[in-house]
Image 1 (spheres, helix red, strand yellow):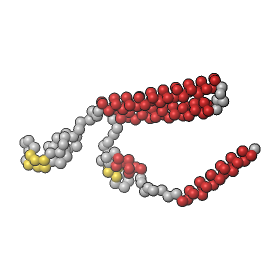
Image 2: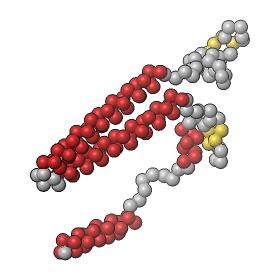
Image 3: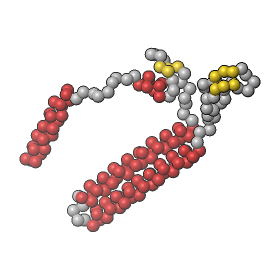
Image 4: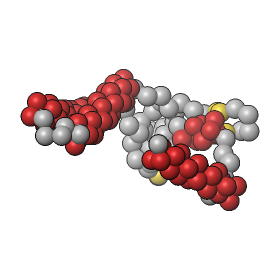
Length: 165
């Protein structure tokens, strides 16, 4: 009973100190508009209420890579949790041979799962990266005389074109 009382008092003390210190914590970042940041991050121009000029879209390999990476993250997190559970089981086994074997097996299988998740992550990202982008890329900006045109300076190709015209 004394242990529970001490645990309860310690918990209240920690929560009280944490609660009292909350007003002292100040954010170290500016307030930003998430829509504005998303627009700028995808190549658009934020005009105050709408995003214009945003033509960036994710292609299929990028979407597949993102989905697989999220699934592999969840698998990796589950493996780490199983390692922790195995460690707790091992610690609380009290010398029971069956409990020790169960804990060791849990840790072993979780480590194997973690290694498989890391390898799958590396393989997926390598394969998607080696496929590359199928979208045409713009040619480097050139200046001077284009064939068949008067002397002009071309800094960027026209939209949808890979060369200056």
